[in-house]
Image (cartoon, rainbow, N blue to C red; front, side):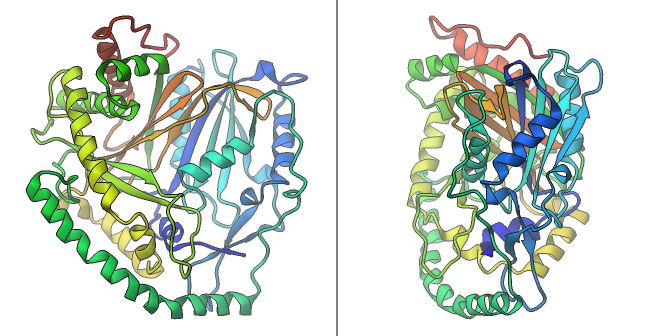
Length: 476
C-alpha cells in the first residue's frame, strides 16, 4: 500500500459535486500514423498492454474506520480497462467548438472513487479526420510533474509500440491488511506533535517577513488582496472549455526582443485577454488582478517523518497587468511584477504547505467545502486570488501517443470556489497551446479569452521586426 500525503488527500476532502478535483488534457491525434491503421479496439488493447508496466494506473483508494490517517492506494485486483476507456463521437460538424463542448460536459462528471481515479475518452468524428483524446486524472494522484510523467510513458518517439520495462511489468501497489493499515495510521498520527513542534518556528517568521517586504514594496500580493470580479464566487459543476495555439517561435522572438522570459510573455498575453474579457463585460477593476501560479517543488527536501506523497507543489501569487493599456506596456510591467513575486516566493519554505497539509482533517474539510460552496461564502470575504495561470514546458520534438502522432495537447486544470477560471499553457513541438477551463455559470463562453490571447501575441509580434505568423488558421 502507498499512503496519500495530506496534500494529496486534501484534493479528496475538498471535492464536491460542484468543485471537482481532477486535471484533464485534450490531445488531437493523427490516426494515419498508426501502424496497420487506427482501430479503437487496437488502441485500447495497446493501452492495456502499457498499463501492465504502470502500477499508478491500476491503484485505487482504500480506507477503513480503524485507519486514523489519510487513505492509502492499493492495487485494484479487478482492474478492467473497459471501465476506464470510453468511445464517443463529436457532434456534427465535428469542429473545435463541438469538441470543446463535448469535453466540457465530460469535465463536469465526477470520477468513480471505487475504481482507479482516471478515465480516457476517445473522441471520433472530427471534421479534419483526426481523433481526440480527453484524459482525466484525479489531483489526489497526480500533480503537473507526475501527470506529465505518466502521459510520457504512454508516448514514444516513433509509431512502433515500445517494449515494456521488465522490472515494472507486474509490479503491484499491494494491499492493505487491516492491522497494518491501522498500525501505520496510528504511528503517523502519534508522530504529528513532533512535526508540529518543528513547523511552528518555520511558520511564525513568514507573516513578519511578508509585512516587512510589503513595506518596502518588494512583496508578492498577499492572499485576500485581489479585486472582486464575477469570476470570484461559488462555482457549479458545469464547465466551459476553449483552446487555441500560437507558434512558439513567435513567442521566443518576442521574449528575445524585449529581454523577458517566455513565462512573462504568457502572463502578459493572459493579462491582456482577461482585461479585454472583463472590459467587454463592464467589470474591469482599476486594481490589477492577482493570479495564482502553481510552482513545482519536486526538488525540495522534506522531513523524514512526513509522507511525501504525489503532489509536490506550492503556489506563487503575482499581480497581473490587467490595469495597463497596450500589450507592450503590459509585457514591460509584468516583468517587474513577476520578478518581485519570484524573489519573495524564493525566500519561503517550499515544503511549508505540504507540511501543514499533513494535519488536514477529513470530515471538517469535507463539511467545510460543502458549506463554503452551497452558501456562496466566497462572496462574503475578500477575494483570495482571481484565477489560476500555469505554464508547463513540454517536449520540442514529435511524439506519438499509442502510435498516433500528437498534433496538439491542451492542458486543463481544476477550478475552485472563489476562482472559477483556470488558464494553462503547454509548449509542444514548436507550438504554445493554451487551454482555458471555467465554471460555466461564470464564463459561459471562454472562446473570447483565447481569441484575445491570440490577438495580444499578434500585437506583440507586430512590434518586433521579423516576427512570423501568430495564429493557427485552423482554429474557429
